[in-house]
Length: 570
Image 1: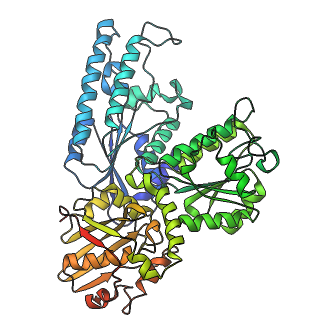
Image 2: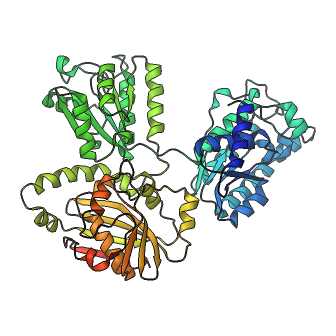
């Protein structure tokens, strides 16, 4: 981004309506262009919001954040000169040997204090940017070697980053190192204005910080082709033993692709297969002992001769997710176009023939399905989908009511009084189909709503004879006199068809002894399932109408063997 464009974007945020959202920038230098680029990136990312950047030094600003609940995020930018001025260009120390040795202890002490300050900070999200500028030529070694002293300083910073990254509200920003070196530093600006970055580098730092502070929502699954994608060769022609993924066969990139999918499967990303092949041939190939993709992470496998879009549609139905939540990968451009024609919002990739391009694709896929942390629900997601398939098969032999009663369903509801449950916020921000209005929250807004008088947040955790689903529902709102006002309500798509939504509503009414309820529903492009649910009652629970409790409770199906409220939740 050019500085002129950034200035125009930064100025535009001042004219936007409403209160400004606050971003704290903590650094040891005058931020100048960095603040401008940050405002510009925020204006691009959140065009409807007004933003204000508050800047300060490490100690005073972190102390301010410690007492403030209004900050959206805090950005901590570290350069070596901020840890000890003798490691910069503005403080003269003669670069003496004793002074340089002393920088190790002062850097260690500064990092320790910084860690304790960050640990005590209440900011909902803190992004730490490690040093991006090289150390000055203060060591006895030449530029082709690394001095032991420099290694000690680097190690101190690395240990600090490893320690601070374990804090629940901290992420460490990784900047692209392709432009590392003196080209990042503006010596003239550092001398005259205490701003050490060249304009292009300031733009890159700002982009990295905003991306880390407000990452896009991850996609949920990957649907992959097989021939010349998961492996090299056509399994229908050469047979299961003729396909390969190895250095010797010039197909190592397919092995890396298998490894990536396996890694993503371990993290709860859904993996499905869409292939034009015979089912038994595909099954034998996927069962090979040397394949690097564990088949427990792959479901379903659609192998037949119908159109790829048909396979994709079946997989989306089984996963119960929308097309814009998944990636489809195939080596055949015609198949990709056929799928895109039916599902315009799906993300597609053609598996490249060039290994460098293919490796770049793997990195891009990794970013699309990124996870900062892995929850218990992530680890059981594929198993619960398999079990759902078994549940559907069993349900075909009995009436729906008898089948549901035979599940042994158990629902545990707990109340989050502080907004600290990350899984609840994740569900609210990524659920589309059973979502009464599509409202999203950032971390700070989500926590602030919990301090409102009468506010509540109920989290539903489900299990039945087919296994646990984990935390799959969130219902939140306010109690005003005898009315339960539901401002938000989401249920994971994995929990559909189990009457969980009925049980959650009934439990909320009983818990708060509500005489009436009001549901703040707003129709979106994707929430038809919740709209149909709200319209299914004799007195429809929609468009903010008040409904007597008796009308609601009388419609509740009694299929649960256990509905409990967590003992310590209230």
